[in-house]
Image 1: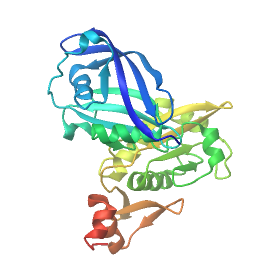
Image 2: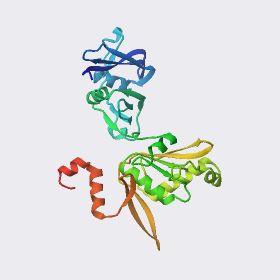
Image 3: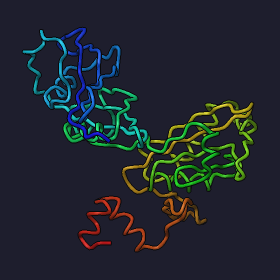
Length: 306
């Protein structure tokens, strides 16, 4: 592969105001021995001025209009991050902005969605922007047929229904939240047949009440509250309804509350292991998981804690 020499976003300013700017966005890439490659990223894009200015200050964005040569970007604070959807021959991601680092993890004030770049170009932008990478969508699979083709693994699980699988659902959701992003499908049997959940939806009255029942189960039995909370949607496949639940990995360790009778309860932690959701009950293993989760696996090993 030809060595990357330089890459940049190029903006053709269409409208410049005090609080925002409207641009046409292009991508230019220079590689050794190849002519300059240019592609249009967005025909029309509106950005808040601090976000626009930050891209210029970091040298990631250049202005195409010679009349903008003397443009002076403000020094308004701005944090940049990537919400990564997929990695491979092309990196798919959203470019996100916020003026506060501590708030960036909860929301972004500005977002350029569905960008696609070659890995070396993406890496160059990451370095130049000092961007934070978040794998919020990595491993997401919205298509039930593709999920069935892949089969159950560390990112995909199937459950035949809700009413008879509540404990298994809780275990799977917590395992995904504690280990990695995951997809949980309701209405697909263990042998990968689409059986549907139409009868359960009819019992609850409608799709909204059905999803509310599932959300209530997660709210009431998982501690602490899942954040981000799983996304749910119901799709019709071959005339049968299937629920897809997307469970993002959480920022802390989650557990399922179980009743032991006589008013007593216990909390159990589950993780993904060898493509299965498993309980972790050993105190030493729990402590090791907690340390790794709080300070990272590499830091924990360097400190000799695990």
